[in-house]
Image 1 (tube, rainbow, N blue to C red):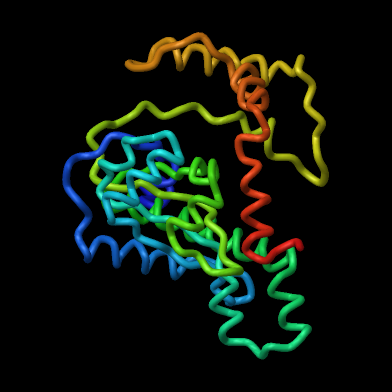
Image 2 (tube, rainbow, N blue to C red):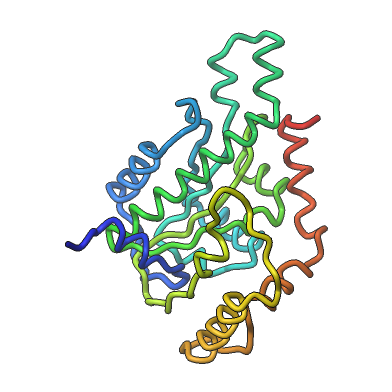
Length: 248
């Protein structure tokens, strides 16, 4: 028997080319509703969602992320860790303030926003939409905070470009489960691991045969390249965390 939920999850791919058709208000409402029914830590619902529809603000987001194709998506969400709303609801005493400004509550907001993000993406794909989750909004956190008028105890976490797909990208092969699923403890990886070498070859073959952006690359090379980036590129993340009232 075919399981449509598993099929949706297992057929995921990131979409970066969209038809020129904005999402309807009903579609946006449905996606938000799906996000709201995702798991949330201690039922505190420690996140908010901002729909960015102003072309001028979308242009700034494109500049921050370096991805101008997002301006052509059917809709754009910014997912925000949010303890500000709960601060408005709670007593203004020392214990409450200590909790709200803690690393624990910062992480809880990030977790809630991230889980809601996946719910939007999966719900969208079940409706025939495509999307890309964008961590690149973190390239300039202080600028994004100003752009969206974010109050204290809020922090942008992820962007979602979503819409009607104008492409069907090939699906990238994932790691073998034996390299990321362990039993009763962590398994230390060796670069000589046969499963890793086989996966490197699988990724090389994938990049050779795909229709666009063909290149010579293994997974090992990809990770090395990712970790060779200037760490100062996103130094503004910590600046933004402090600016918003956490970890001070």
